[in-house]
Amino acid sequence: MEEQGTNATSVTFEREMSKVSPFELKDKLIELADESFKKMAHSMLNAGRGNPNWIATIPRDAFFTLGKFGIEECLQVMNYPEGIAGIPEREGIAQRFEEFLLQNEGLPGVQLLKAIYNYMLMKHAVSPDDFVHEWAEGIIGDQYPVPDRILKYTDMIVHDYLIQEMCDNNPPEGKYDLFATEGGTAAMCYIFDSLQKNYLLNRGDTVALMVPIFTPYIEIPELDEYDFDVVKIRAEKRDKDGEHTWQYIEKDIEKLRNPKIKALFLVNPSNPPSYALGQDTINRIVDIVHTYNPNLMIITDDVYGTFVPDFRSLMADLPQNTLCVYSFSKYFGATGWRLAVIALHENNIYDKMIASLSRKRKTELNRRYSSLTLDPEQMKFIDRMVADSRKVALNHTAGLSLPQQTQMSLMAGFALLDKENRYKKKMYEIIQDRLQTLWDNMNFKLPDDPLRAGYYSEIDLLVWGKKNYGEEFIDYLKKNYNPLDIVFRLATETSLVVLNGGGFAGPEWSIRVSLANLNEEDYATIGKSIRQILGEYAQAWKKNKK
Image 1 (cartoon, one colour):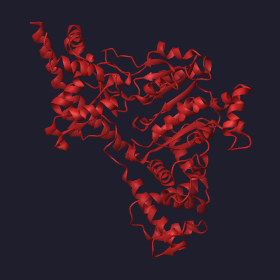
Image 2 (spheres, rainbow, N blue to C red; image 1 turned 135 degrees about the horizontal axis):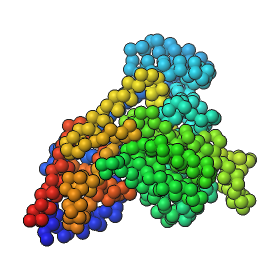
Image 3 (cartoon, rainbow, N blue to C red; image 1 turned 30 degrees about the horizontal axis):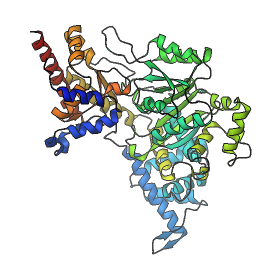
Image 4 (cartoon, rainbow, N blue to C red; image 1 turned 180 degrees about the vertical axis):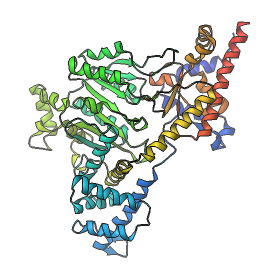
């Protein structure tokens, strides 16, 4: 039988490409896109990566205006015509800052600077000179980060932001320790490394992944230095119509009862389905931890949490067990800034488990961190992560750069002071409009779901096929096509780039479309193209039946 839209060589190639990461596959798909389209960049639609096509302007305006103040502060200390200035002085800097704000009321971002300044004075009763001096040095970037984990006042602002966005303004008792990192990817590397360095995870240990999931969480455990035994907990729930809800079946969550499972990794809301955990799943995980597996380490990547109303992270419900990674990249359109934090509650199982290690391992770790403190045994796990991020010996130069932390504080402050949630509501509207346009043009019905973030959409072609044509058509698809066929056809025939859902440990016949990086009308084009190719599969099947 002659295969539709491919040949024997391309089928073999597709099978081979199914073994590589979806993000590496993306580059090949771009290469395969028709040359005539590639010459017209606006016609090649890349919905493969999640880099947003928006930015938050107000905190950036504040950043650049704060830079003007920082330069003025340096010049008033030392000013050589050759372009050499001093460094900001603390004494009296708050009064000079207030005068700067009055004299520059018309500059972009001034109102945000004034609002955050007043917020810190009123809510946290900070020393005005100390706070403004941190900002001035931060914007100039003339010092190493001190403290190295996160700057003192940046910590306060970002902590408040996480309580608002990750804990739905209802946090547990106590405080979270924060470590500012070079984006969420650096945070992931530091966590994996320090868990192993401190014997909390050892080569060959059993860990669980809630899948589908961002591919590095699948690939890192397979690396030789980790070689973890991975238990996959799949989002396989369906509604009464057979549609994916992208939630988890209770019997699969029950696997976490097994104390052999030492760590649970998840992205919440998920990537690529883009759904937050349901409350029943959260309740079940909480119960399992409290009753059966109290030392379960939970590593949750919550970068998409701000796209779900009233989102609540596991860091709020299981604070002692949860390491939370939050990145500013998506919500604020700041992937190039590399801004993220790791949050760990001050009262946590990580510190307790390190304290319970054997004397031999404690001695090894004391030797590892002995150059940093006279009592290394008392070092918190999060501070060990900071040291490990610079191979311990370079701990004195650890930490996220001051300008990056300053921008982070301005973004967090902007969200905290947006009491009417104008930015958030508009962000929801942008994403949901794009999502609805995509599904409308595929001629698929998108059911309402308050847990949907909508940053990505995972489309299961077998669900579509079964609903429209039945099991016989599904059997035909599986027999005659590779799951990557539609991904390659979209690239070569329509110059559209999407990723294969199977690469994220999702349904093998699914595709992932990012709703973040194209305009609304582009998603109409993508939807129509997907529908057209699916229709061609159906026509080939009908012709074959005859």
